[in-house]
Amino acid sequence: MQKLDAEALFQTLVEQMRPHVTPDTALVGIHTGGVWLAERLHRTLGLKQPPGSIDVSFYRDDFASKGLHPQPKRTDIPFDVEGAHVIIVDDVLYTGRTTRAAINELFDFGRPSHVDLAVLVDRGGRELPIAARYCALTLPQPLPASQSLQLETDAAGTFTLRLIDA
Amino acid sequence: MHNPQLNKHGELQHLLTIDGLPRDVISAILDTAAPFTEVAEREVKKLPLLRGKSIFNLFFENSTRTRTTFEIAAKRLSADVVNLNVSTSSTAKGESLLDTVDNLCAMQADMFVVRHAASGAPFLIAQHLLATGRDHIHVVNAGDGRHAHPTQGLLDMYTIRHYKRDFTNLTVAIVGDVLHSRVARSQIAALTTLGVPEVRVIGPKTLLPTEVERMGVRVFHDIREGLKGVDVVMMLRLQNERMNGALLPTPQEYYKVWGLTAEKLALAKPDAIVMHPGPMNRGVEIDSSVADGAQAVILPQVTFGIAVRMAVMSMLAGQQGSNK
Image (cartoon, rainbow over all chains, first blue to last red):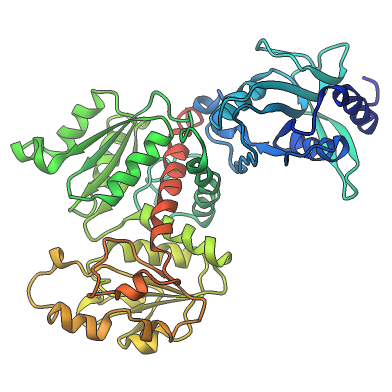
């Protein structure tokens, strides 16, 4: 696989989203990579609504087989979801199950007018009918299930993408 | 000895008592409870975690707050909840405890929340489930006799952590009728496990168990002496219904000596918090001006209790796949 330049991908994503957002567009990042991404997109795109964050631990569909995630984070939606244009932000799109859980959770806060999905990388391997409206890179070949791709950030806030072999 | 509360992976299988529960398990429950507190602020106050699970509230002894908070907690997790007020049903007709349990298991119960006047009743049910190969069914002790009330102890720890952040520099006083209090036993076990350096027990000799020092606490028979410089005051309810014979003078006498008044509370640290497990006897163990005062966190305790019970129930139900 080619080396992924997370910073360049971030700029690509910003340019894809810019024509379609208004100051009232609200971002919701999925823990943990999506939250970092949403915070930076929020600043770069100059949005008015504070970004929200979602931990989907309580909405996962594998709770019965895997149990509760050991340290669930707080879901925080600091804007009124009712009637809002919401963009769910995640670093990597894989099976689509996390996105499904995030949409379900979002709707428990109100009825948004539109929901879009923005991701840095689509790694393939979808198990649900979910597609990202904004996606900086779709990998030409799906990653094997034994590998995981993660967004990381350093003290200066610079993004890197790390490929991990399980 | 094997701890009957933990499965072979060291995960919580039942919650029966805080005594013997490892510190990391207690901390994990408190950490898990934190995000559940936020659910109350949503448009839809419900999470789908326990959808399709049946939880039976088996209350062999009356309770309003505990039963209601367990019920709300289970419902916010989308479980189906059945409340059995057993003191007015089958057992009154002579059915044994384990027969009642077997019948509810035949109705596909996934969890029992048990309150019983006899110490050890939830243990008996857990053992029975294990012995009959039904270890996918979980038991939560909601108060047994004088023995334990673990979710109350845990919600008290959550409350202390919320206001004081760190356990390792605190002085905590437990005041009142320790002898009859399962709450006090759970509190002492939790506080010492979490590393609180000084736990004080304050009360008249007749209302303190004889072996109480062995639980790792300092004993005071003078409330003014005992409250000096404490960070947390945990009041206990004077348990009129558990009193046999003349352990006490009149409630008025008790109030004069042991009741928490503003004047006595002033001996604690200025930022000390006042807790009470409820129901309160105003004008007996606590003065109204303190119960309704700025230092009281008695109502937040109730709210945190829902989140803590949600955490316990979802951790128990979430073990089902991983121990197979």
